[in-house]
Image (cartoon, one colour):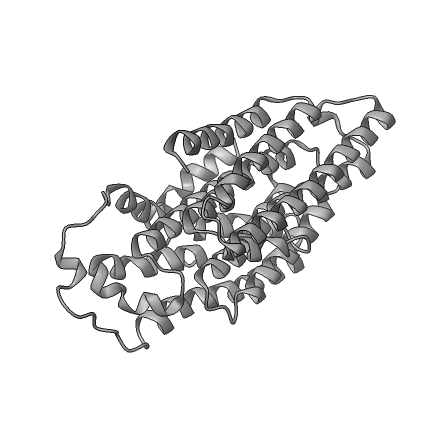
Length: 348
């Protein structure tokens, strides 16, 4: 694919999301999401591999189904209430249908089955776009929907945390592990939307930061399988020392950045009071923490190193600028002290 064509599709991705952000009308927001979807499919098949073609087909059918459901829900809301504005969807049935359609678009459980298979068949750069940028439009619409069905958000969020933890247990492909990690993090965001929408924005920011850092790290190492991480010490010894901070931050361990949104969401759930939901979410997050520790421990500490012949790669000049990666790793690991300022903003 030529650079001009590639740039055109990337610009279309940005314009589709910006159109959704700027829309107050359901039909215009729907058009923005569709532009986003159609711009991503050519990027999926830029390497004409059969698995990539299969993944793009699965993605198209899943997104088309969700888009049809979303359009039907907005039409039903127009018939029942006479309103097309996004914040004025007040009837329970259209609101629930819109929530389920948007949940299918981003891959919330139990409407998640397309996401791990699609990400597994794509390259890391396209997987990064699918796991981060493509979530912004639907999550914005979920943020705008009034809390007519908070229990539906809680149910989708709790199911996603459980499925995201169980799904990554026995995986050895890094892209599938990241996909299930994405499902679990989106579950935390959905639960925050039910109790405190501004807190969902914080969880989204931390998720975007952590996922982008993880994907850029895997791209730098050219790692797609757990076994390839065993020789990361030879490619980048400094990075091997900082990689556990990314994983443990994704797992939500203190004193790393990823602990902040989970801590605040659990505190808000207890204050509601939804103590049982908070306990189930906290216990389910341990499932995700298991495979993060497995990535760190089993792949980098216990597997025998595969010594490459010749000059060690870390002695060579790096092919790309690592400043951005260094900044994102630092932010992923060291933003927890900002929690008091975040609490002041959320309670203001």
